[in-house]
Amino acid sequence: MAYAGLDIGTSNCCCYVALGQKGKPDVVPSNMGAHVTPSCVAYTDKNILVGEPARQQQSSNPLNTFVEFKRVIGRTYDERSLWKDAKHWAFSLARPNPESEPDGAPRYTAMHCGDIMRLTAVDLYTVLVMRMVQSLTDHIGADVPLRSLVITVPAHFDHSQRKQTLEAVSKAGVACRVRVFNEPSAAIIAYAENRTDIRPGETVLVFDLGAGTLDVTCVRITQPHQYDILGSEGCCDLGGADFDQRIMSMAAAHYKQHTQRDLRTNKIKLVNVRNACEQAKKTLTVASETTIHIDDDVAPLTVTREAFEAAIAPELRRCSELVRHLLQRLHLTPADLHHVILCGGSSRVPGVRRAVKAIFPNIEPLTNINADECVALGACLFARDASVFRDDGGDDDDGGDDDDGGDDDDDDDGNVDGGDDRDVDGDVDGNGSHTDGGDGGCDDNDGGEDDDGDDGDDDAECRKDKSGTGCGERLVVRDVAPHTIGIRTGENIMLPLVARGAMLPAAATQKLVPQHKRQKYADICVYQGEESNTEKNKYLGFVRLRNLREGHPVVTLVLAVGVDAIIRIDARDDEGHRVIGKIVLR
Image (cartoon, rainbow, N blue to C red; front, top):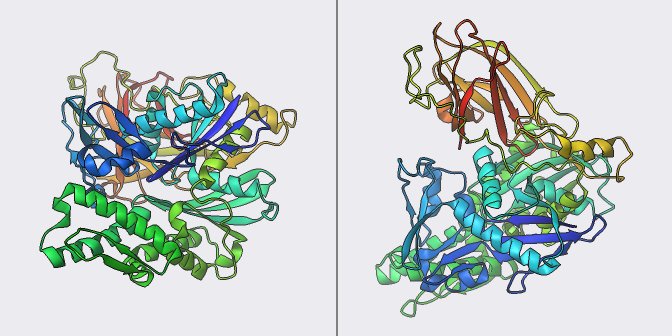
Protein backbone atom coordinates (compact mmCIF):
# COMPACT_ATOMS: atom_id res chain seq x y z
CA MET A 1 0.00 0.00 0.00
CA ALA A 2 1.14 3.52 -0.83
CA TYR A 3 0.18 6.76 0.90
CA ALA A 4 0.77 10.01 -0.97
CA GLY A 5 0.67 13.74 -0.34
CA LEU A 6 0.27 16.08 -3.30
CA ASP A 7 0.85 19.83 -3.12
CA ILE A 8 -0.42 21.62 -6.21
CA GLY A 9 1.05 25.09 -6.01
CA THR A 10 0.48 28.18 -8.11
CA SER A 11 3.96 27.87 -9.59
CA ASN A 12 5.11 24.29 -8.84
CA CYS A 13 3.78 20.92 -7.69
CA CYS A 14 5.43 18.42 -5.38
CA CYS A 15 4.49 14.89 -4.36
CA TYR A 16 5.73 12.61 -1.57
CA VAL A 17 4.87 8.94 -1.09
CA ALA A 18 5.32 6.39 1.69
CA LEU A 19 5.18 2.64 1.07
CA GLY A 20 3.36 0.96 3.94
CA GLN A 21 2.31 2.43 7.27
CA LYS A 22 5.92 2.39 8.46
CA GLY A 23 7.43 3.53 5.19
CA LYS A 24 9.58 6.65 5.09
CA PRO A 25 8.20 9.44 2.87
CA ASP A 26 10.10 9.78 -0.36
CA VAL A 27 9.87 12.59 -2.91
CA VAL A 28 8.39 11.58 -6.26
CA PRO A 29 10.62 12.83 -9.11
CA SER A 30 9.03 14.48 -12.11
CA ASN A 31 9.33 13.05 -15.61
CA MET A 32 12.37 15.34 -15.94
CA GLY A 33 13.96 14.01 -12.74
CA ALA A 34 13.30 17.13 -10.63
CA HIS A 35 11.72 17.29 -7.16
CA VAL A 36 9.08 19.77 -8.33
CA THR A 37 6.93 19.99 -11.46
CA PRO A 38 6.00 23.42 -12.88
CA SER A 39 2.24 24.06 -12.71
CA CYS A 40 2.10 24.65 -16.43
CA VAL A 41 -0.10 23.08 -19.13
CA ALA A 42 0.29 23.67 -22.88
CA TYR A 43 -1.81 22.62 -25.86
CA THR A 44 -0.07 22.11 -29.20
CA ASP A 45 -1.12 20.82 -32.60
CA LYS A 46 -0.27 17.26 -31.56
CA ASN A 47 0.13 17.01 -27.79
CA ILE A 48 -0.83 18.24 -24.36
CA LEU A 49 2.35 19.11 -22.49
CA VAL A 50 2.61 19.32 -18.72
CA GLY A 51 5.31 20.64 -16.40
CA GLU A 52 8.79 21.49 -17.64
CA PRO A 53 8.15 20.50 -21.32
CA ALA A 54 5.21 22.91 -21.35
CA ARG A 55 7.25 25.66 -19.76
CA GLN A 56 10.15 25.26 -22.19
CA GLN A 57 7.94 25.98 -25.22
CA GLN A 58 6.00 28.80 -23.58
CA SER A 59 7.68 31.61 -25.51
CA SER A 60 6.87 29.98 -28.88
CA ASN A 61 3.30 29.10 -27.90
CA PRO A 62 2.21 31.85 -25.48
CA LEU A 63 -1.52 31.86 -26.24
CA ASN A 64 -1.93 28.14 -25.55
CA THR A 65 0.35 27.76 -22.52
CA PHE A 66 -1.41 28.27 -19.19
CA VAL A 67 0.04 29.06 -15.77
CA GLU A 68 -1.20 30.22 -12.36
CA PHE A 69 -4.64 28.63 -12.82
CA LYS A 70 -4.72 27.97 -9.08
CA ARG A 71 -5.61 31.66 -8.81
CA VAL A 72 -8.63 31.08 -11.07
CA ILE A 73 -10.14 27.87 -9.68
CA GLY A 74 -13.38 28.43 -7.82
CA ARG A 75 -13.71 32.02 -9.03
CA THR A 76 -16.15 33.59 -11.47
CA TYR A 77 -15.44 35.69 -14.52
CA ASP A 78 -16.91 38.82 -12.95
CA GLU A 79 -14.67 38.84 -9.86
CA ARG A 80 -12.67 42.04 -10.17
CA SER A 81 -9.66 40.72 -8.27
CA LEU A 82 -9.15 38.14 -11.01
CA TRP A 83 -8.27 40.78 -13.56
CA LYS A 84 -5.38 42.18 -11.55
CA ASP A 85 -3.58 38.94 -12.40
CA ALA A 86 -5.03 38.39 -15.88
CA LYS A 87 -3.48 41.54 -17.34
CA HIS A 88 -0.03 40.03 -16.76
CA TRP A 89 -0.78 36.78 -18.64
CA ALA A 90 0.04 36.25 -22.31
CA PHE A 91 -3.10 34.12 -22.75
CA SER A 92 -6.58 35.52 -22.29
CA LEU A 93 -9.71 34.54 -20.38
CA ALA A 94 -13.07 34.42 -22.13
CA ARG A 95 -16.49 35.19 -20.70
CA PRO A 96 -18.58 32.02 -20.16
CA ASN A 97 -21.70 31.48 -22.24
CA PRO A 98 -24.60 31.96 -19.81
CA GLU A 99 -26.66 29.25 -21.53
CA SER A 100 -24.13 26.49 -22.17
CA GLU A 101 -21.68 27.43 -19.39
CA PRO A 102 -23.89 28.56 -16.48
CA ASP A 103 -21.22 28.01 -13.81
CA GLY A 104 -19.82 31.49 -14.45
CA ALA A 105 -16.22 30.25 -14.50
CA PRO A 106 -13.83 32.04 -16.90
CA ARG A 107 -12.83 30.05 -19.96
CA TYR A 108 -9.37 29.47 -21.38
CA THR A 109 -9.33 29.21 -25.17
CA ALA A 110 -6.80 26.80 -26.68
CA MET A 111 -6.04 25.50 -30.16
CA HIS A 112 -5.43 21.75 -30.06
CA CYS A 113 -5.24 19.36 -33.02
CA GLY A 114 -7.00 21.92 -35.20
CA ASP A 115 -9.90 22.40 -32.79
CA ILE A 116 -10.75 25.33 -30.54
CA MET A 117 -11.18 24.18 -26.95
CA ARG A 118 -12.85 26.09 -24.14
CA LEU A 119 -11.31 25.02 -20.86
CA THR A 120 -11.84 25.84 -17.19
CA ALA A 121 -9.31 25.94 -14.38
CA VAL A 122 -10.73 22.56 -13.29
CA ASP A 123 -9.80 21.09 -16.70
CA LEU A 124 -6.22 22.36 -16.36
CA TYR A 125 -6.04 21.12 -12.77
CA THR A 126 -7.22 17.71 -13.99
CA VAL A 127 -4.44 17.47 -16.58
CA LEU A 128 -1.87 18.45 -13.96
CA VAL A 129 -3.15 15.92 -11.42
CA MET A 130 -3.08 13.18 -14.07
CA ARG A 131 0.58 14.00 -14.79
CA MET A 132 1.49 13.95 -11.10
CA VAL A 133 -0.33 10.67 -10.49
CA GLN A 134 1.41 9.16 -13.51
CA SER A 135 4.79 10.22 -12.09
CA LEU A 136 3.75 8.64 -8.79
CA THR A 137 2.77 5.39 -10.50
CA ASP A 138 6.04 5.31 -12.44
CA HIS A 139 7.94 5.82 -9.17
CA ILE A 140 6.27 3.15 -7.02
CA GLY A 141 5.30 0.73 -9.78
CA ALA A 142 1.90 0.00 -11.29
CA ASP A 143 1.48 -3.08 -9.08
CA VAL A 144 1.56 -1.06 -5.83
CA PRO A 145 -1.96 0.16 -4.96
CA LEU A 146 -2.43 3.73 -3.80
CA ARG A 147 -4.56 3.65 -0.65
CA SER A 148 -4.78 7.31 0.35
CA LEU A 149 -4.05 10.61 -1.37
CA VAL A 150 -4.05 13.92 0.49
CA ILE A 151 -4.16 16.94 -1.79
CA THR A 152 -3.40 20.26 -0.15
CA VAL A 153 -5.14 23.61 -0.53
CA PRO A 154 -4.64 27.02 1.12
CA ALA A 155 -6.34 27.24 4.51
CA HIS A 156 -8.48 30.16 3.36
CA PHE A 157 -9.81 28.33 0.27
CA ASP A 158 -13.60 28.43 0.31
CA HIS A 159 -16.20 25.80 -0.50
CA SER A 160 -16.10 26.46 -4.26
CA GLN A 161 -12.33 26.22 -4.51
CA ARG A 162 -12.16 23.05 -2.41
CA LYS A 163 -15.02 21.38 -4.25
CA GLN A 164 -13.51 22.13 -7.64
CA THR A 165 -10.14 20.81 -6.46
CA LEU A 166 -11.82 17.52 -5.57
CA GLU A 167 -13.68 17.60 -8.89
CA ALA A 168 -10.36 17.81 -10.73
CA VAL A 169 -8.98 14.84 -8.78
CA SER A 170 -12.11 12.85 -9.56
CA LYS A 171 -11.94 13.71 -13.27
CA ALA A 172 -8.30 12.64 -13.26
CA GLY A 173 -9.47 9.12 -12.39
CA VAL A 174 -7.73 8.80 -9.03
CA ALA A 175 -9.00 5.52 -7.59
CA CYS A 176 -8.32 5.76 -3.86
CA ARG A 177 -9.42 7.62 -0.76
CA VAL A 178 -8.90 11.33 -1.34
CA ARG A 179 -9.06 14.27 1.03
CA VAL A 180 -8.29 17.96 0.72
CA PHE A 181 -6.11 19.21 3.56
CA ASN A 182 -4.89 22.67 4.51
CA GLU A 183 -1.33 23.53 3.50
CA PRO A 184 -0.28 25.12 6.84
CA SER A 185 -1.59 22.05 8.70
CA ALA A 186 0.59 19.87 6.50
CA ALA A 187 3.57 22.12 7.17
CA ILE A 188 3.28 21.84 10.96
CA ILE A 189 3.08 18.05 10.65
CA ALA A 190 6.22 17.98 8.49
CA TYR A 191 8.16 19.87 11.16
CA ALA A 192 6.66 18.60 14.41
CA GLU A 193 6.79 14.93 13.43
CA ASN A 194 10.49 15.25 12.59
CA ARG A 195 11.79 17.46 15.40
CA THR A 196 12.11 16.88 19.12
CA ASP A 197 12.19 20.57 20.08
CA ILE A 198 8.54 21.13 19.12
CA ARG A 199 6.70 19.83 22.15
CA PRO A 200 3.12 19.38 23.40
CA GLY A 201 1.74 22.52 24.99
CA GLU A 202 3.54 24.82 22.57
CA THR A 203 1.96 27.22 20.09
CA VAL A 204 3.37 27.49 16.58
CA LEU A 205 2.75 30.01 13.82
CA VAL A 206 3.01 28.78 10.24
CA PHE A 207 3.80 31.46 7.66
CA ASP A 208 3.19 29.88 4.25
CA LEU A 209 3.93 32.22 1.36
CA GLY A 210 3.89 30.57 -2.03
CA ALA A 211 3.76 31.92 -5.55
CA GLY A 212 0.08 32.79 -5.42
CA THR A 213 -1.27 32.67 -1.88
CA LEU A 214 -0.40 33.50 1.72
CA ASP A 215 -1.62 31.53 4.72
CA VAL A 216 -0.86 32.47 8.31
CA THR A 217 -2.01 29.83 10.79
CA CYS A 218 -1.64 29.39 14.56
CA VAL A 219 -1.46 25.81 15.83
CA ARG A 220 -1.39 24.47 19.38
CA ILE A 221 0.13 21.06 19.98
CA THR A 222 -2.12 19.67 22.71
CA GLN A 223 -0.65 16.16 22.89
CA PRO A 224 1.93 14.17 20.99
CA HIS A 225 0.70 13.91 17.39
CA GLN A 226 -2.39 16.03 18.10
CA TYR A 227 -2.69 19.49 16.58
CA ASP A 228 -5.43 22.04 17.23
CA ILE A 229 -5.71 24.79 14.64
CA LEU A 230 -6.50 28.00 16.50
CA GLY A 231 -7.20 30.13 13.47
CA SER A 232 -5.98 31.27 10.07
CA GLU A 233 -5.74 34.37 7.94
CA GLY A 234 -5.06 34.24 4.24
CA CYS A 235 -5.07 35.99 0.91
CA CYS A 236 -5.62 34.54 -2.58
CA ASP A 237 -3.72 37.30 -4.36
CA LEU A 238 -0.55 37.69 -2.36
CA GLY A 239 2.56 35.72 -3.23
CA GLY A 240 5.68 35.42 -5.33
CA ALA A 241 3.71 36.05 -8.54
CA ASP A 242 2.91 39.51 -7.20
CA PHE A 243 6.63 40.08 -6.58
CA ASP A 244 7.25 39.06 -10.20
CA GLN A 245 4.64 41.57 -11.35
CA ARG A 246 6.42 44.37 -9.48
CA ILE A 247 9.67 43.59 -11.29
CA MET A 248 7.66 43.23 -14.50
CA SER A 249 6.35 46.77 -14.07
CA MET A 250 9.93 48.00 -13.69
CA ALA A 251 10.94 46.16 -16.86
CA ALA A 252 7.91 47.46 -18.80
CA ALA A 253 8.68 51.04 -17.76
CA HIS A 254 12.34 50.60 -18.76
CA TYR A 255 11.31 49.18 -22.15
CA LYS A 256 8.81 51.96 -22.82
CA GLN A 257 11.33 54.63 -21.86
CA HIS A 258 13.74 53.37 -24.53
CA THR A 259 11.28 52.33 -27.27
CA GLN A 260 8.00 54.19 -26.59
CA ARG A 261 6.27 50.84 -27.02
CA ASP A 262 4.13 48.81 -24.61
CA LEU A 263 5.86 45.57 -23.70
CA ARG A 264 2.52 43.79 -23.15
CA THR A 265 1.48 44.09 -26.79
CA ASN A 266 4.12 41.54 -27.82
CA LYS A 267 3.02 38.24 -26.29
CA ILE A 268 6.26 36.37 -26.97
CA LYS A 269 8.38 39.15 -25.51
CA LEU A 270 5.97 39.38 -22.56
CA VAL A 271 6.48 35.70 -21.71
CA ASN A 272 10.26 35.91 -22.02
CA VAL A 273 10.51 39.01 -19.83
CA ARG A 274 8.08 37.59 -17.28
CA ASN A 275 10.20 34.46 -16.92
CA ALA A 276 13.32 36.63 -16.65
CA CYS A 277 11.64 38.64 -13.88
CA GLU A 278 10.83 35.47 -11.97
CA GLN A 279 14.45 34.37 -12.26
CA ALA A 280 15.60 37.84 -11.16
CA LYS A 281 13.50 37.51 -8.01
CA LYS A 282 15.19 34.20 -7.20
CA THR A 283 18.63 35.63 -7.89
CA LEU A 284 17.98 38.59 -5.58
CA THR A 285 17.31 36.14 -2.78
CA VAL A 286 21.03 35.35 -2.68
CA ALA A 287 22.61 38.26 -4.57
CA SER A 288 22.58 42.03 -4.10
CA GLU A 289 21.74 42.81 -7.75
CA THR A 290 20.92 41.21 -11.08
CA THR A 291 20.26 42.22 -14.70
CA ILE A 292 17.24 41.52 -16.90
CA HIS A 293 17.68 41.25 -20.67
CA ILE A 294 14.54 42.60 -22.34
CA ASP A 295 15.44 43.15 -25.98
CA ASP A 296 18.54 43.33 -28.19
CA ASP A 297 17.78 47.00 -28.89
CA VAL A 298 17.39 47.92 -25.21
CA ALA A 299 20.10 48.07 -22.59
CA PRO A 300 19.70 45.43 -19.84
CA LEU A 301 17.83 46.53 -16.74
CA THR A 302 19.83 46.35 -13.52
CA VAL A 303 17.73 45.62 -10.43
CA THR A 304 19.21 45.82 -6.96
CA ARG A 305 17.82 44.03 -3.94
CA GLU A 306 17.14 47.41 -2.37
CA ALA A 307 15.06 48.53 -5.38
CA PHE A 308 13.25 45.19 -5.45
CA GLU A 309 12.29 45.37 -1.78
CA ALA A 310 11.14 48.96 -2.20
CA ALA A 311 8.92 47.83 -5.08
CA ILE A 312 7.34 45.01 -3.05
CA ALA A 313 6.93 47.11 0.09
CA PRO A 314 3.10 47.09 -0.24
CA GLU A 315 3.10 43.28 -0.33
CA LEU A 316 5.46 43.09 2.65
CA ARG A 317 3.12 45.36 4.62
CA ARG A 318 0.18 43.13 3.76
CA CYS A 319 2.12 40.09 4.99
CA SER A 320 2.82 41.80 8.32
CA GLU A 321 -0.76 43.03 8.65
CA LEU A 322 -2.16 39.52 8.18
CA VAL A 323 0.12 38.15 10.91
CA ARG A 324 -0.77 40.93 13.33
CA HIS A 325 -4.48 40.65 12.56
CA LEU A 326 -4.46 36.92 13.26
CA LEU A 327 -2.70 37.37 16.57
CA GLN A 328 -5.13 40.12 17.54
CA ARG A 329 -8.16 38.02 16.59
CA LEU A 330 -6.89 35.08 18.63
CA HIS A 331 -5.94 37.32 21.57
CA LEU A 332 -2.30 36.28 21.32
CA THR A 333 0.90 38.27 21.52
CA PRO A 334 4.23 37.44 19.84
CA ALA A 335 5.49 36.31 23.26
CA ASP A 336 2.81 33.59 23.33
CA LEU A 337 4.39 31.86 20.32
CA HIS A 338 7.13 29.26 20.76
CA HIS A 339 8.04 28.61 17.13
CA VAL A 340 7.55 30.20 13.71
CA ILE A 341 7.69 28.01 10.59
CA LEU A 342 8.47 29.54 7.21
CA CYS A 343 7.41 27.56 4.16
CA GLY A 344 6.47 28.23 0.56
CA GLY A 345 9.07 29.27 -1.99
CA SER A 346 8.48 33.01 -1.56
CA SER A 347 9.34 32.82 2.15
CA ARG A 348 12.98 32.73 1.02
CA VAL A 349 12.86 36.40 0.00
CA PRO A 350 15.06 38.28 2.53
CA GLY A 351 12.55 41.11 2.85
CA VAL A 352 9.83 38.62 3.82
CA ARG A 353 12.03 37.04 6.46
CA ARG A 354 12.89 40.44 7.93
CA ALA A 355 9.20 41.35 8.06
CA VAL A 356 8.44 38.18 10.02
CA LYS A 357 11.47 38.64 12.25
CA ALA A 358 10.33 42.19 13.09
CA ILE A 359 7.14 40.75 14.59
CA PHE A 360 8.89 37.88 16.40
CA PRO A 361 12.32 39.30 17.32
CA ASN A 362 12.96 36.61 19.94
CA ILE A 363 12.13 33.62 17.73
CA GLU A 364 14.44 32.18 15.11
CA PRO A 365 12.17 30.92 12.29
CA LEU A 366 12.40 27.26 11.32
CA THR A 367 13.49 26.82 7.70
CA ASN A 368 15.43 23.55 7.65
CA ILE A 369 12.92 21.65 5.48
CA ASN A 370 12.91 22.56 1.79
CA ALA A 371 10.28 25.30 1.47
CA ASP A 372 8.98 23.87 -1.82
CA GLU A 373 8.59 20.33 -0.43
CA CYS A 374 7.48 20.94 3.15
CA VAL A 375 3.73 20.85 2.50
CA ALA A 376 3.84 17.70 0.33
CA LEU A 377 5.92 15.93 2.99
CA GLY A 378 3.41 16.79 5.72
CA ALA A 379 0.49 15.75 3.53
CA CYS A 380 2.14 12.37 2.95
CA LEU A 381 2.60 11.87 6.70
CA PHE A 382 -1.05 12.77 7.23
CA ALA A 383 -2.17 10.31 4.55
CA ARG A 384 -0.13 7.58 6.21
CA ASP A 385 -0.79 8.29 9.88
CA ALA A 386 -4.02 10.28 10.25
CA SER A 387 -6.68 8.85 12.52
CA VAL A 388 -9.40 10.56 10.51
CA PHE A 389 -9.48 10.08 6.76
CA ARG A 390 -12.72 10.38 4.85
CA ASP A 391 -13.40 10.08 1.14
CA ASP A 392 -15.27 13.27 0.36
CA GLY A 393 -14.82 13.03 -3.35
CA GLY A 394 -18.49 12.59 -4.16
CA ASP A 395 -21.45 14.39 -2.73
CA ASP A 396 -24.63 14.38 -4.70
CA ASP A 397 -26.04 17.30 -2.79
CA ASP A 398 -23.34 19.86 -3.55
CA GLY A 399 -24.08 21.28 -6.93
CA GLY A 400 -26.25 18.34 -7.94
CA ASP A 401 -29.82 18.44 -9.14
CA ASP A 402 -32.35 16.39 -7.23
CA ASP A 403 -35.16 17.65 -9.42
CA ASP A 404 -38.44 15.91 -8.83
CA GLY A 405 -39.73 16.65 -12.28
CA GLY A 406 -41.72 19.74 -11.37
CA ASP A 407 -41.49 23.12 -13.03
CA ASP A 408 -39.07 25.45 -11.30
CA ASP A 409 -41.08 28.46 -12.41
CA ASP A 410 -44.46 27.10 -11.33
CA ASP A 411 -45.83 29.32 -8.58
CA ASP A 412 -49.55 28.62 -8.96
CA ASP A 413 -49.79 27.51 -5.34
CA GLY A 414 -47.25 29.86 -3.86
CA ASN A 415 -45.72 33.28 -4.21
CA VAL A 416 -42.19 32.15 -4.95
CA ASP A 417 -40.58 32.73 -8.29
CA GLY A 418 -38.39 29.66 -8.66
CA GLY A 419 -36.40 31.31 -11.43
CA ASP A 420 -34.81 33.89 -9.14
CA ASP A 421 -31.90 32.03 -7.62
CA ARG A 422 -31.00 34.89 -5.29
CA ASP A 423 -34.44 35.51 -3.80
CA VAL A 424 -34.97 34.22 -0.28
CA ASP A 425 -38.62 33.39 0.10
CA GLY A 426 -38.71 32.33 3.68
CA ASP A 427 -38.84 34.10 6.99
CA VAL A 428 -36.52 32.97 9.75
CA ASP A 429 -38.17 32.49 13.07
CA GLY A 430 -34.93 32.87 14.99
CA ASN A 431 -34.95 29.38 16.41
CA GLY A 432 -31.57 28.03 15.47
CA SER A 433 -28.97 25.81 17.01
CA HIS A 434 -25.32 25.10 16.40
CA THR A 435 -23.02 22.24 17.17
CA ASP A 436 -19.37 21.74 16.48
CA GLY A 437 -17.12 18.77 16.58
CA GLY A 438 -14.66 18.57 19.42
CA ASP A 439 -13.51 15.06 18.70
CA GLY A 440 -11.19 15.71 15.78
CA GLY A 441 -13.77 15.13 13.09
CA CYS A 442 -15.14 11.63 13.10
CA ASP A 443 -18.55 12.73 11.85
CA ASP A 444 -19.59 15.24 9.23
CA ASN A 445 -22.78 16.19 11.03
CA ASP A 446 -24.27 16.60 14.48
CA GLY A 447 -25.17 13.00 15.02
CA GLY A 448 -28.00 12.70 12.51
CA GLU A 449 -28.04 11.20 9.07
CA ASP A 450 -24.83 11.51 7.08
CA ASP A 451 -25.34 14.12 4.37
CA ASP A 452 -23.17 12.44 1.77
CA GLY A 453 -25.10 9.20 1.92
CA ASP A 454 -22.45 6.87 3.29
CA ASP A 455 -22.84 4.93 6.48
CA GLY A 456 -19.82 6.34 8.31
CA ASP A 457 -17.78 3.13 8.11
CA ASP A 458 -14.76 5.12 6.92
CA ASP A 459 -14.48 6.43 10.48
CA ALA A 460 -14.33 3.08 12.21
CA GLU A 461 -10.55 3.30 12.18
CA CYS A 462 -10.75 6.67 13.93
CA ARG A 463 -12.98 5.30 16.68
CA LYS A 464 -10.76 2.28 17.10
CA ASP A 465 -7.59 4.37 17.37
CA LYS A 466 -9.06 6.68 19.99
CA SER A 467 -10.07 3.76 22.12
CA GLY A 468 -6.42 2.79 22.33
CA THR A 469 -6.93 -0.58 20.70
CA GLY A 470 -6.01 0.34 17.16
CA CYS A 471 -2.74 0.82 15.34
CA GLY A 472 -1.14 2.93 18.05
CA GLU A 473 -0.45 6.64 17.95
CA ARG A 474 -2.06 8.39 15.00
CA LEU A 475 -2.10 11.96 13.81
CA VAL A 476 -5.11 14.05 14.78
CA VAL A 477 -5.58 17.52 13.30
CA ARG A 478 -8.57 19.48 14.53
CA ASP A 479 -9.20 22.28 12.09
CA VAL A 480 -11.54 25.27 12.14
CA ALA A 481 -13.92 26.86 9.65
CA PRO A 482 -12.01 29.37 7.48
CA HIS A 483 -15.07 31.55 6.82
CA THR A 484 -18.47 32.30 8.36
CA ILE A 485 -21.27 30.55 6.44
CA GLY A 486 -24.80 31.89 6.56
CA ILE A 487 -28.02 32.55 4.66
CA ARG A 488 -29.72 35.71 3.48
CA THR A 489 -32.82 36.91 5.31
CA GLY A 490 -34.89 40.05 5.00
CA GLU A 491 -33.20 42.94 3.22
CA ASN A 492 -29.79 41.44 2.48
CA ILE A 493 -29.21 40.54 6.13
CA MET A 494 -26.60 37.87 6.72
CA LEU A 495 -27.73 35.26 9.25
CA PRO A 496 -24.56 33.39 10.34
CA LEU A 497 -25.00 29.64 10.84
CA VAL A 498 -21.43 28.36 11.16
CA ALA A 499 -19.00 30.99 12.40
CA ARG A 500 -15.40 31.43 11.29
CA GLY A 501 -13.17 29.61 13.75
CA ALA A 502 -15.78 26.97 14.67
CA MET A 503 -14.17 23.58 15.27
CA LEU A 504 -14.82 21.23 12.36
CA PRO A 505 -16.94 19.34 11.67
CA ALA A 506 -19.66 21.81 12.57
CA ALA A 507 -23.41 21.82 11.96
CA ALA A 508 -26.17 24.35 12.50
CA THR A 509 -29.95 24.12 12.19
CA GLN A 510 -32.32 26.95 11.40
CA LYS A 511 -36.11 26.86 11.29
CA LEU A 512 -37.68 28.66 8.33
CA VAL A 513 -41.31 29.69 7.90
CA PRO A 514 -42.64 30.35 4.36
CA GLN A 515 -44.06 33.80 3.77
CA HIS A 516 -47.32 32.55 2.31
CA LYS A 517 -49.77 29.99 3.63
CA ARG A 518 -49.97 27.90 0.45
CA GLN A 519 -46.38 28.35 -0.62
CA LYS A 520 -44.80 25.28 -2.21
CA TYR A 521 -41.42 26.56 -3.35
CA ALA A 522 -38.64 28.61 -1.79
CA ASP A 523 -35.01 29.49 -2.57
CA ILE A 524 -32.54 30.03 0.26
CA CYS A 525 -29.32 31.86 -0.68
CA VAL A 526 -26.05 30.81 0.95
CA TYR A 527 -23.17 33.22 1.56
CA GLN A 528 -19.74 33.26 3.13
CA GLY A 529 -18.09 36.22 4.78
CA GLU A 530 -17.86 38.27 7.93
CA GLU A 531 -20.07 41.23 6.97
CA SER A 532 -23.64 41.73 8.20
CA ASN A 533 -24.75 42.75 4.68
CA THR A 534 -24.82 39.85 2.22
CA GLU A 535 -23.93 42.17 -0.67
CA LYS A 536 -20.47 42.53 0.89
CA ASN A 537 -20.03 38.76 1.26
CA LYS A 538 -19.44 36.05 -1.33
CA TYR A 539 -22.48 34.39 -2.84
CA LEU A 540 -21.99 30.60 -2.79
CA GLY A 541 -25.26 29.45 -4.31
CA PHE A 542 -28.80 28.56 -3.38
CA VAL A 543 -30.93 25.80 -1.88
CA ARG A 544 -34.27 25.23 -3.60
CA LEU A 545 -36.99 23.87 -1.34
CA ARG A 546 -39.84 22.07 -3.14
CA ASN A 547 -43.16 20.44 -2.34
CA LEU A 548 -43.73 22.44 0.84
CA ARG A 549 -46.95 20.93 2.19
CA GLU A 550 -49.86 23.04 3.34
CA GLY A 551 -50.30 22.63 7.07
CA HIS A 552 -46.59 21.83 7.56
CA PRO A 553 -45.08 25.29 7.12
CA VAL A 554 -41.97 24.97 9.29
CA VAL A 555 -38.83 23.81 7.51
CA THR A 556 -35.65 22.91 9.39
CA LEU A 557 -32.52 23.70 7.39
CA VAL A 558 -29.36 21.83 8.39
CA LEU A 559 -26.07 23.29 7.19
CA ALA A 560 -22.98 21.21 7.96
CA VAL A 561 -19.33 22.01 7.28
CA GLY A 562 -17.18 18.88 7.15
CA VAL A 563 -13.61 18.38 8.31
CA ASP A 564 -12.58 19.32 4.76
CA ALA A 565 -14.48 22.68 5.07
CA ILE A 566 -16.90 21.59 2.34
CA ILE A 567 -20.56 22.46 2.90
CA ARG A 568 -23.41 19.95 2.97
CA ILE A 569 -27.05 20.94 3.28
CA ASP A 570 -30.32 19.20 4.09
CA ALA A 571 -33.86 20.44 4.81
CA ARG A 572 -36.97 18.70 6.21
CA ASP A 573 -40.44 19.76 7.21
CA ASP A 574 -41.86 19.35 10.71
CA GLU A 575 -42.84 15.73 10.00
CA GLY A 576 -39.35 14.80 8.83
CA HIS A 577 -40.05 14.76 5.08
CA ARG A 578 -37.09 15.90 3.01
CA VAL A 579 -37.98 19.00 0.99
CA ILE A 580 -34.74 19.61 -0.88
CA GLY A 581 -35.39 20.03 -4.59
CA LYS A 582 -32.03 21.32 -5.73
CA ILE A 583 -28.76 22.47 -4.21
CA VAL A 584 -26.51 24.58 -6.39
CA LEU A 585 -23.33 25.60 -4.60
CA ARG A 586 -20.62 26.82 -6.93
